[in-house]
Length: 92
Image (tube, rainbow, N blue to C red; front, side):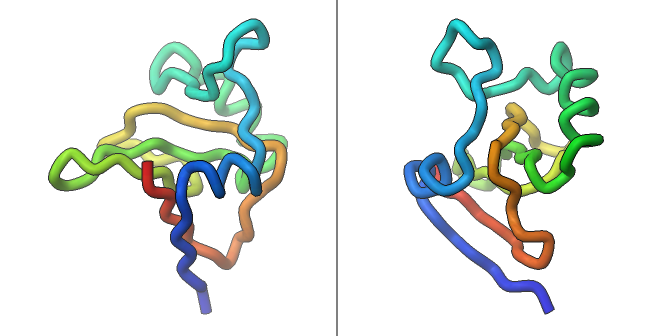
C-alpha cells in the first residue's frame, strides 16, 4: 500500500536536497526539453531522485516524484531519493 505525503517546497528542499541544474547558479530546475538526456542519465542512477514540476488545475504548481510528461514545467534531481512506496505532493 502506498502512502501519501504533502509538504511545502521548503520542507522538500530541506529533506531531499535538490542539486543545482548548473553549478554556477542557484537554479534547481532542469529544462524539460534541452536537459532530457541529462535527466535520463540521472534516472539510470536512481529513478527515485527524479521529480517533476507540474502545472495543475487553477494555475497551481506542485512537484511530484518521477518523470512526468503531461503538464510538466521542469525537472529536478535530488541527492536523497524519495520512498518508492510513497506518493509525494509538494506545494509550490
